[in-house]
Image (cartoon, rainbow, N blue to C red; front, top):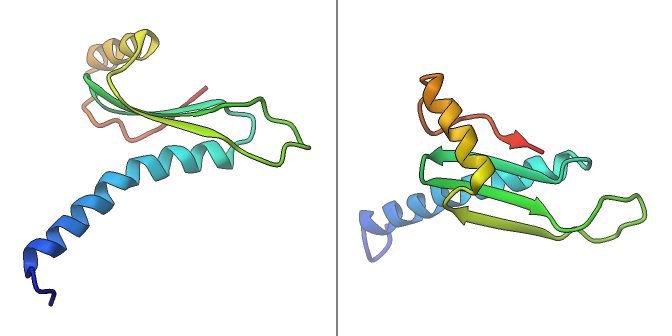
Length: 98
């Protein structure tokens, strides 16, 4: 047991759960080379989005990914309205790819 006790273990678990959405969207983006953007919806006011910064080609040796965690943009707000109309709850488990 660490010198901080059980509280330190709780902080470590919270940190890992906070990292998991980022891993999911980045993993989806890396697994599908033709996909440019992956979006995970947490609620009406929070989304996690990963965007590939360059167009995919076979000779490309680097991958640059921008990860955004925050409020949804216009297209994502429209999709959230459709989720509410379909009576789907948040967080949405599937990742939207574009």
